[in-house]
Length: 308
Ligand SMILES: C[S@@+](CC[C@H](N)C(=O)[O-])C[C@H]1O[C@@H](n2cnc3c(N)ncnc32)[C@H](O)[C@@H]1O
Image 1 (cartoon, rainbow, N blue to C red):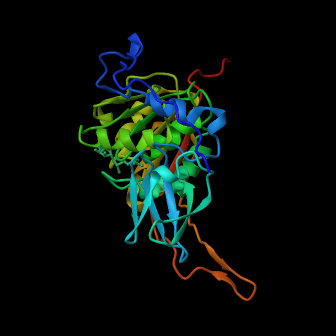
Image 2 (cartoon, rainbow, N blue to C red; image 1 turned 135 degrees about the vertical axis):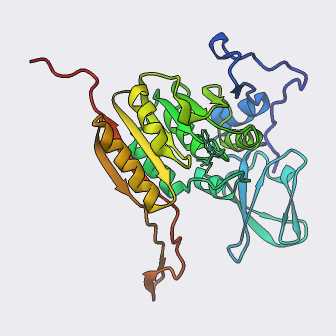
């Protein structure tokens, strides 16, 4: 079958500068991948496999291989080679035959597929927890959010997808090292992350932004951010913290309570259990994820005291 043509851009084209307000910040995701803008965003390419996409190759035994499609790429699936040029422009979810014989089903990777397989700099927030953070923090198109701890960029990707291009995310990150990897991970699912700014700063020392809709923390001592969150959130704004241990959870809750500025304080854990379902058997899977972390949520009370 003939492949649809893939638009190509001048490789020497100069990337656009960030808006003036963003220039001079510690780091800025300012180089949209122009080729993918054209190949992946157009409605005509919806449902097709495109250069730059993270994809899954699934063999007959259900084993999954993960890779990013490149024009001249080759994925080694258990010793058999799959050539990307045979996939680009083809339908998402198709079955293909490797040149050495075995067949593979190829799907574009979802957020969940990508986040759980992406190269990691630090432990990521698992998609089951990220999904609840997005819903409980009421993240929506246009929201202004601050995140503490970039890490591998898994949570930042979930936030950026929820707030859309009209929202804005500022991530505070202590170290320079995670930057390149996180940027690559985020770009795999989001072509244009111009609304994501990374500040190389310690979030325990303060938050510059004001009137935020949401603050989301994945740093070791989130209770040290509570006082700053109190000042940076809008009335009714959302606070969320992810912590690996119950003692940390308690410390965040006590810090939130001690300010008298937060309400609807909620602590929880997401337990995900898959089931084995066939005509003859109906039972939970033998294996499940034992523990990821705890989540603490709260809402900022109104700033203005009621009259009278
Ligand atoms: C566990 S990782 C975050 C993972 C990320 N949520 C994800 O899903 O990929 C924690 C990150 O917080 C950063 N960090 C630790 N303390 C910090 C602080 N005080 N201010 C800003 N970043 C901090 C670390 O350098 C690390 O990159």
